[in-house]
Length: 417
Length: 165
Image 1: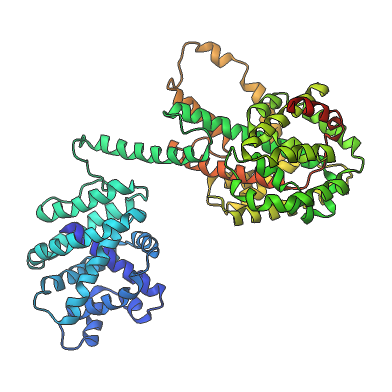
Image 2 (image 1 turned 120 degrees about the horizontal axis):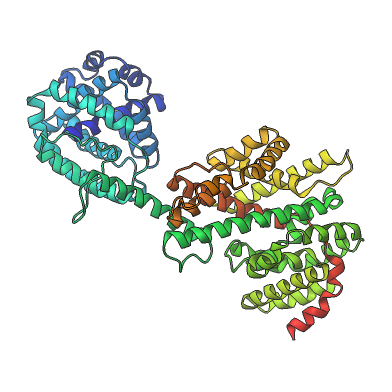
């Protein structure tokens, strides 16, 4: 029950934030005042109804509009987390209780509150999804059902006994949990666990919130030690990120194990950095060219050639197909007019700098995505035709052409060195 | 992570930055060194990241301080450190035996500004950094470049014919 109240208080805070957010001036201003004032104000609004109910009804009307939106949920929750201060807590906890009360009265209640309360419960379960991503939304509906049952069970007891005492406890625990809760949670476990949490904690009213800041609960058949829980969370974080990296780094699908993956990642980062160095040197050599026709070059010149080199790495393959065919005829024009002028001295300079990073050539041969650099920059008409032939023969041969260009590269460098 | 529009944005920014670099270096009539271009490209990359990642902030921060001073300091520091005396004193100490730890350190050195970052955060930074580097490479490839190795290409067709045949 305490968890529920906590969550309700959170919802309350969210509503407050929203109201300021949506410019709900009257509510927002009111909420910032102490709770008694709040109650007093709402009494006027819902004349004839209990002040508690009135407040709740008024509160719940506004958030209806706002909480239907999906994404702001998380942002709001963050806000509510930050917004917890000691005085606010008291406010929140007492209002939390007020929110509780209508649930007990749903059976024989004014229709407004009855209609609103289930929605409010739904909203309450929303913040509990706090740290989870889309996966949270699906279990959100499950939790709604849970909550409905749970709240009805627990509400009666709550409103009757030990209101203030629990609120005080709750206040402190809220401070500890909310302010220190981290935002990183494994979403799946959290969903399952928090739903298990609420149902279990409803039944065991005496079980106070764990000192856990991340609401992790041991899954079935696993150690329940707090250390192992924390470790498991940590491991899951790490493995999740490793999965992302696996998608990014080519050729990591077959490798299992952190060490191997890290090796690949390191190699990849190093090669990318080397590539950048190489390209920047090349661009430096282009110096006088850059001043005119930048946009033309930029958009047309090297796009298809570079792109065809990329499919193996999957970098820009989606860009290649539409662009490729149109740009081919343009290339020849560009290459002819742009590159026929004598660039001898930059050639020499460039080649000397090329020979400097000696380790590069081997990697260029190995890494297919870089071998096509050379053809992209060397649009002699003949060579270009040759390579176009290669490319035209289909993607499957693009790899062959890359090796071809790799051999060109190697031969160039051998002539230099 | 890197969408097409982001790529375009980065490319345009890169071109502008490069033009800027050349304008700066033209008065002195020297062609900009590769390093300057690289730094400019890194800077644009970091700006494109909008400060949400650690490495981008590190790149921008290092640009604010004197680059040359930094590089000189690093160069001087390295030979000073690697005299090997510290290693001789403790020859048998196995520091961080798990290979993973070593690699984590290496990765931390590679990603700018992430030397002492915790492992999961380091992975996250590395993810972002790799995506950004890929974008940078793509943009720089597209960028106008001449045919610096054109001279050697004269003989290349002979080789290409060989390779084809």
